[in-house]
View 1 (cartoon, rainbow, N blue to C red):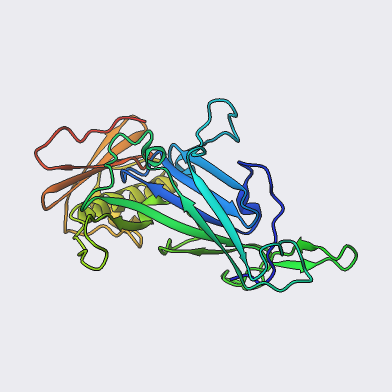
View 2: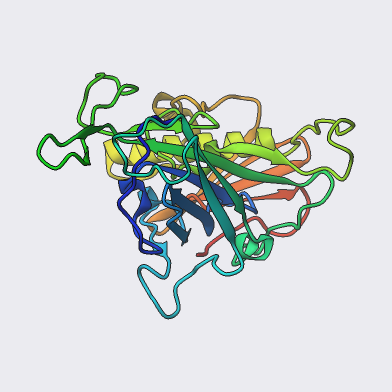
Length: 294
């Protein structure tokens, strides 16, 4: 919903969130690494990128914006389009009051799964992690030029009216930060008719949450103490929502050099996360869960 539809960026793989935009985030293997991001503005200008790991874990962008020759890109074969209502030509036209703009996006499965060794093809009962974001900037009409100009005035911030953008998401993040894939929504694929499909329990979820509770507590402990610890009881004082350390899972921490492998077992699953947020889940009794990597 947008009455003043505007955009300034026209070059593919620009940093699109400097305009109002719509964004898609996809993690096809649930490891929190090598996830994909796509952004589009009202002009139909797009940006696709791969994050080897979250920025907070010293991750970096892999895209044609960074490396025009070998950088990651979903186009081609990605397809996208934008429509503005009610006047499709009324972009950057302060004299026309619009109602909204929409976008349709066809994301290539092969590109979404690229470089995700644990990814599963969409099939009945398969889960992916996905989120959507809408960045919205305040604008005003420049009295001298009669054109739109950005005028940040955040309405959803802790202090309404702040000189920042509004950020809207599909699955609640708990903070203004999209690059926390473990908090994204859960998409379940089904081969059944949409009206007949049934929700499947995400059996890995308790183990995943338990492992991430150790990750966050370890990071907080390091921030305060300057080191990691394998003392799980001591970590409980550093545990925070939305991933609290509980007694529901069997836990173990192995300190390795300047990092760690934190393991949590629940029911039939064992989840292991390292200091770079790389998270893998295996059936207990399967292959080694050690994840020195990436």
